Image 1 (cartoon, rainbow, N blue to C red):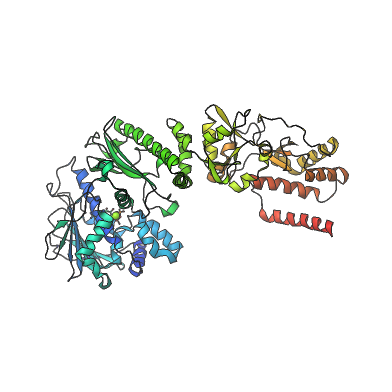
Image 2: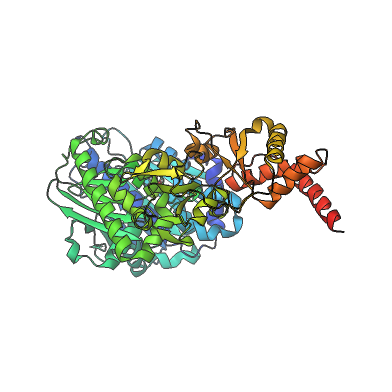
Length: 629
Ligand code: ADP
Ligand code: MG
């Protein structure tokens, strides 16, 4: 053990964000304070991974022969804990940089959230894992003494009591690595009990791959973690609870995963790995992990912490570990990308994962529906982008439809089996919510003839169908397409009481009122119960993308549509009569405006002013009420 002989210390001030974080930590009543140990061990393990990786190509380091390990010593009388590693170490500048600012992205996300909802702070500390600074939940004073692996770097000391400043100085540590000495707060004395530390290590750090030695004041050091590479065990030997514990320790996610896939194959490539689908999608700033990607090992040596090439991008929600003995150990992080082996691994991992998702869908539909709700959009992204796996991905798709309603789901296969004998296309309707899509006037015809229509209401759906275009030779068709070749002709439609002349006058009046806002006004022959609908002009090739564009582009204005009106609808008939008989009636123009706005609302493309609309509705209401008084 080294003693940091201290020379004069220099005092520095923390950055504002660190002060803020420390202030929260010092005053929090957080109950899971034990996670401080998980954070320090995880840092030690990172440091060991890094020196191990460095030594693959560089032997000019301090202590090249030192065992790669973590040592914890506790003294319950003195209320101290020391955590030491033989990792990559830090010089003075690195201490300032790493422990004087916020490096950990979890801590930054935590702070952002802290500013938003003060009340739930204590609950979310554990979720974010605030990194090194979490030690101040239990520590009165922390001293870090570190010696970098670089032979010419000098050892340095960092000390803080968790207030607004920290001190820096020299140290005479000879051996490589970092030592963290903690003087516990009075109310955190329990953490100096060796049995308590052992329990915490087992709960949060059992699968850390380096040995963690625990030593009490008078005892002998002994290894307390299992440090087995679970992914290298034969799948038949691993218990479900072990997968769960491994997942939690890998991701710091406290919910059990939805699915695990243990892969163990020797051909065409050697691969051992475990992939996990989390129980929930990480949303925006509540991300637990700074980056996505799988941990890539070669013979148990960590090559890359967040590899993004082992799975296609749309599977970025998958967590896990992959180890291949075929990967040369001297591979650098930069060349991993272009290594042909990685391409082979990606192919194998992707098809296996998709296969397992398919089995989940077949065998545990309830669980699959949870999966679908959380991750369906990623699968849709895959359908649009991964041509090689399209068939497998198509089987994973689920839709609500006019048949299933908002509760049930259908697959494409089931839809195809239910198609009408003379039906050639798969019909869908795009909308920005299920509620409005379900009430769309486009569905009149399809409801009447019992033809199923799929509801596509995810913002990525338009993009997906524009890439997909057909499924097993059946074209996908948008019900707002004006040129639909519909399987059944309209027969015996109720005759309209509106004369051709009155109807033409109405059409002319609507054109005059709406002007540029509509491309064309005409009779809609497929409408049944709805007074009108908006359809896309034939030459609007990008209409599938309008929902995506409205989300992505701030000033996006959808191109003008064709307005189709239902001559047989009583409201349209009344309006036509009014235009014919009393063209100066003050209700006509507001009624036309309102009809148009209603359709835009149903389509989810209304961009006008709500206040103006409310004014107008009030005027129409007054007229309606006056007519009845
Ligand atoms: P994170 O681990 O997410 O980067 P932390 O707050 O836990 O954030 O740690 C901050 C940084 O301090 C680390 O990125 C690392 O560079 C450095 N560090 C912390 N502990 C050690 C250690 N035991 N050995 C070497 N470097 C360390
Ligand atoms: Mg950390």
